[in-house]
Length: 342
Ligand code: CP3
Image (cartoon, rainbow, N blue to C red):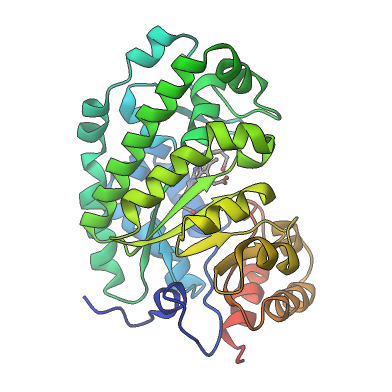
């Protein structure tokens, strides 16, 4: 199907465009009142596994806010779930994995076959979403990075410093390497499934990449993201994002992904010095700015566009949108970009 608004795809192909494309991380769910209605009615994994609900939630920000791309409503933790771990979404607390990985024997229990079988539900979800989108904008698929998934699988929940996850890698080097390997294979298979179902772009979220030292990043995260990017890049546009992972920028650029996601703790100077002037950069408005006022959001958004003028740039937040942002502040962000012309 031809895509009517293909601005994101043209930018990922490094074409000149009359304005930057815009979408933002965690745009599906969270701040939209219509999402809250569905959230009150259906539990999280029912929302993730039901084609009509996935289509409605995924496309809500396209219809209601006018972003240039949709991102599949799902979660990075569907992979640990598919591999055989229990995952609960506890209101007010976030994800909880009640039986976290603690030993090599726990790693051996994970099953790639079970994961592929479990995740078959995603194909009709993607198809329903694409049918409903009817070619308006491209659909983005995603997975978590193996390191970020290890964090939740070992820690059993979110954490400030993921000390348990780091300790597992330090004290069980073989088991942790095997865990990262299995998760990498599951990520590749799931992304290929998403591509076969029709997503045009995939993003790898290394949300906890920035808590590693550069040395640990080189051991526990980069090699696995390298494999995922290599397995997908001939088939689909790839976006690599490591929150706060300034030290990963140069290595990401060497993998030649379609784009690299930036955090607000980075700037153009650092990005360009590390990745060169030909790279496509995505980001990086501080999501906290959306708490200010529509006028301030507009000012900051224009400053961001100016910062990256002359480079290939996709406007996005530097991390996911916060849950309690007023919708008119989100509109100020999106409308500022959409009414801009170079
Ligand atoms: O971008 C989108 O809106 C698409 C859907 C999406 C969700 N999670 C839905 C969700 C995406 C892309 C994710 C990615 C995700 N999930 C990441 C990487 C991005 C990031 O923010 O760093 C991570 C680390 C997770 C793990 C996770 N899932 C956490 C920490 C939480 C709880 C807190 C929260 O709201 O993010 C979740 C639950 C979750 N995933 C919700 C949603 C809409 C909230 C629960 C609900 O609405 O019932």
